[in-house]
Image (tube, rainbow, N blue to C red; front, top):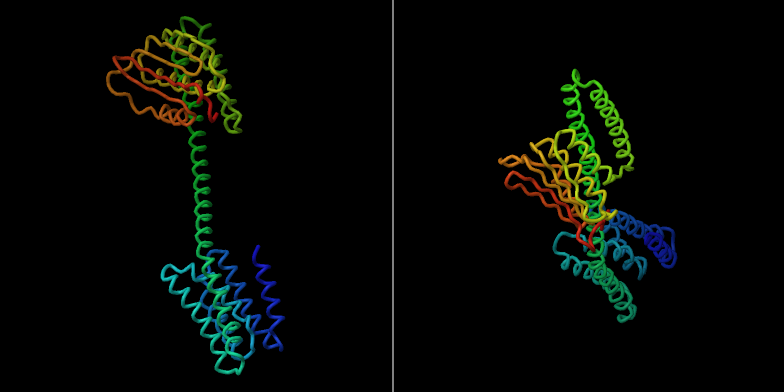
Length: 354
C-alpha cells in the first residue's frame, strides 16, 4: 500500500535534484535501498538488509551534501533508519539519537565547502533533514507497537482456528464413539438373547436378527450423516430406543414427562440419554431405570451401580464440556447403589450455542 507512494516520492526527488545522469544513479540507489528495506520490513525480516541499506543511504546523504548540493538526498536514510531503529532488540533510543545526529552532522559538513548563508545551510541541511528523520523515527515506535499487536492478534486467531479444528475432531470422534459403541453393545445384547432362544423360540430369534440388521443399517446411515455433518439426534427416537434396549436386557424402565422438552436442547439431551444408556448396559447390573424429562433437562437414575468407583466415563466427560459450553449443567452422582445422570439448561441459557 505504501510502497508505490515511497517510490513516487523518491522518483520525484531524484528528478528534482539530479543534474547529470551519474547524480540520478546515486540518488536512485538511495531510493532503491529505501524500497528494499521497506519490502523486507513489511515481511518482518528487515534485519537481513538493514546494514547494507543504511550504509548506502548514509553514503548518498553525505555525497549529496558535499558533492551534489542535494538537500533531499537524506530521503533514503530517513526511510531506512526509521524502519530499522524500532526493530532493534535494545538501545533503540540511543540508536534513534545517533541516526538523527549523523543526519545533522553530515548536513553541517556543508559549511566546510560553501560560502552560502550559514542560516540557510543550517535550515536546509541540518534542521529540516534531522527534524524529519527524528519525526519519522519517533512515529515508527508506536507504529511498531501497533504492528506487534496486529501480529499477536493474527497469532491468536490462528491458535483459535487450530483449537476449533481440534475441538471439531474431538466432537467427531465422540459422536463416532457414540454411534459405533452404542450399536455394538446393542448388537451384543440381541445376539446373546438370540443364542439363548435359538432352540426354544425361533420366531423371536428371527425378529432379533431382523432388528440387528436394521440397527446396523441405521448405524451405517448415521455414520454417513456424521461424515457429511448432517447428523441430528432426535430425543423422542432416542427415548424409544432406550426403552427398547432396557426391556430387551430385562430392565424395567419408567419414563416421566413433566413437560415438553425445549427443541433447542433436545439434541444434547438425546446425546446424554444415549451415552447414559450405553453406560448402564455396560457397567451396571441394573434392574430399574427411571427417566424424567422436563422442559429443559433430563434425569436418568438406575440401580445396580457397583459399590466400587466406576471406571472413567470418558463419554460423559466429553458431554459435560459440550453441555457446559452451551450454558447447561451436567451432574453425575453415584450413591447407595444408584447412579444418577442429569443434564439441565436453566431458562435464559438453553441452547445458547446449539
